[in-house]
Length: 476
Image (cartoon, rainbow, N blue to C red; front, side):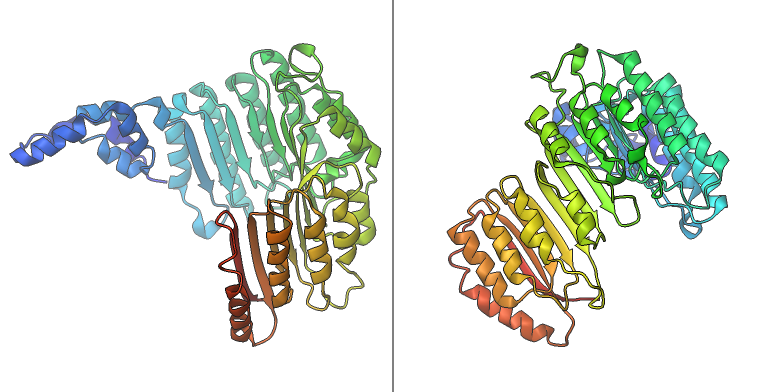
């Protein structure tokens, strides 16, 4: 982020006059005249890709450019990164963010703030001051925010004092109550609130929507990692109660620790805009993203019938599921039940040869349940002592609508050829394939030669629409 001197260039009349006090050559004037005569829409498109410093300098070129530089469309989207590491702490970053909102916040419609979580209480306090200052400034300038993203605060860390956590949540609530009037997209990934703080904010969000309906609704909400990792949110009845009343919600992201039969029931009982049932007004839930990790509660049993009922109520529903380090077959079977309209599945499973666990049941028994819905599959495995080549190929063979396949695993070189054969003969929709073949030996060069030789026989037969990549890399 550039410093605030760049923004000052937008209003520096003297600098503008000095920049044009000298007459250029005739040819130079003619060239400048051509640039000056460009339509506003062309200049706006070019300026949109310039960093702040270049924008400040461009505004000094001529009065026309300066006028175009003030177009609201150039300042509607903003991204800030706040570092929580003391060695990378820069007060200028925080001041620049607040300064930007102070001078241009009246145009701001989409704000994204990504945080590197603080490691010390001193940095946490500074981070709290910066975030609260930014949110309060949004209220002061009455920013027309439509999308707010505040990612990776991780307030379950010991560096966050309880008073600082409460202050951040209160500032967000203050923004809802006093500032935001058009907000329809909220992303609070990795915020890690305790149950009381999290429900307090969600209740305020519900009141915000009730206040603004029927004109504005929260249509997209991403709360993956919103609660502490130790919180069994699925046991709290308040979460389903709140989600049931959020009208207009079409996209929802949650940690799997929030999922319960009651929550799925609440989602299908939601009312559309104006109190109507689901219909063509766009209020039906379309995307449901779930994130399940080993460190969060995930052993609850969610019935297949609950999923099937939700899928029936929301015929366009796409479920995206990410599973990290859950290497227990019984627990996975509780998660991957029939009836889920699973469109995308991502899984990371690093397990040692000493662990009494196999990935094969996931490939051969669980994922085939979604052969008619699964389109995107990403697997990252450390199966150094277990061959899953046949099970993987059988899964690809039965998944009727698979379009994107990404595999990082220990697989045989010849499995790549067998996979391409399935693609050419049967799975014509599978047009994105990315393979990273893990190896723990010193024979990387030999494996690369084998891969190149094997692929050479397919190069002339691969269709142009197929995006294919395969490589051998060491497993570390």
